[in-house]
Image 1 (cartoon, rainbow, N blue to C red):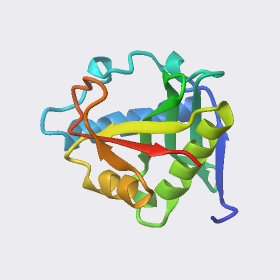
Image 2 (image 1 turned 120 degrees about the horizontal axis):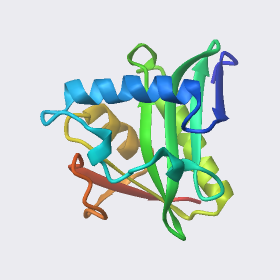
Image 3 (image 1 turned 180 degrees about the horizontal axis):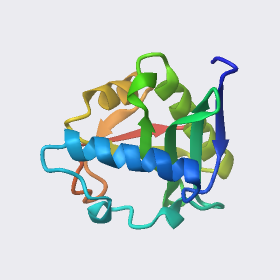
Image 4 (image 1 turned 180 degrees about the vertical axis):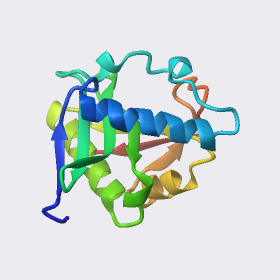
Length: 156
């Protein structure tokens, strides 16, 4: 990855995280047939991303925040990946794959053996990313209102 790309852990309440999350929520509101309200999602608080069981990563390109993603505990062995987003202008050049790999590495470092996530049918590019990164589709493991596809990956 380019030296212009930096991924760092930050609180999900930081200014950069809030910037990314607001753009993410706005995009989902536009793309999801049913709209999007983060308050109706299974992740009720950004505090769930706090260490030691969680983490929130910000991706910057030339110093500007262009992506984010977090993980929290689903159970003692499984990390739950949530709120992964790359700015539209940064898509298609490997930033999403790079961020996903960083989230997986963070999950490994915390001690998780599996990463689980879900996504909406309106996000085919996310589904493709997860499948190409070794995630397999599994039966629903939660009752996320906005989910149509659930995935998991065993971490080596």
